[in-house]
Length: 341
Image: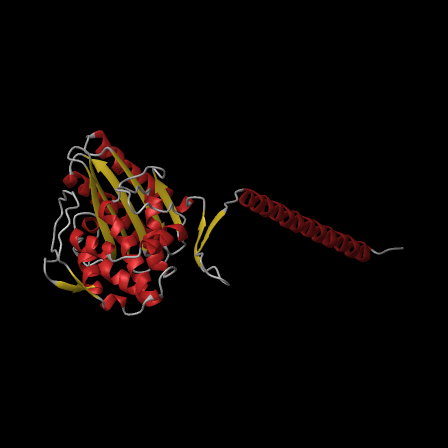
């Protein structure tokens, strides 16, 4: 005969194992649900696939140097700043001060990008001086010492361009090294220095540059070559990544671009003394102006590339648009950089 004490012990024993079984079952069930949710999340994420564009340099026997590896998809993290920039563009279009604008932004902390009016093309104007700069520096790599070559400026050529932003220019009868001419071309955006450099440049080097970054090879006799903001940004990216020129020449190119004296665009939207390597360009007609700028802004721990191309009636208004877009982008990049610390 089982005593009351033994019955009580058996009951407690059964109750303990029953409770333990329920607890274990509950835990396993929750773990299984968590696993299923994670699998669904991963499945959802994996279904959102994004292809990559890979650009390599040609012309070598045994190697194909890597230049760019880009996701085809725009960044979801940059949707907020994209909407803010669109609001700026819409505001100026509503007043008639802006006909059209395109913006390309790439931040280098996570190598993400966004673009507005990605397929719209513009005449680059003096922005074309950056690929000329890269081609000249590539000539220096092929023929070391080329930057020290002296060229006499003995004939002025009328390029037919009526520019609003003028600065220092080379003087007839004077001799200049290629290095000095590059400074005039980039720092002061001097068209005379550019024409003199182009007349001493191997056009095949320039054409190969376009081919290597994946753009249509320009006809050297053509009077115009149009870019989208995304296409043009390849040249600035090639300099920043040191993916086309060697490190020394890439650094020299960045240093020259940091000396650009144009202050009426992207620079207007930045705090004083912000480091930036940039180039501007103007084009169009008397009634249809185009003003553009592309620059690498060296925000402390989050550098970014910003290319803005605009079309409208007045350069003054277009520079205002560029400055305001620059400010919006800087504030957004600054806030996200601070949040990530």
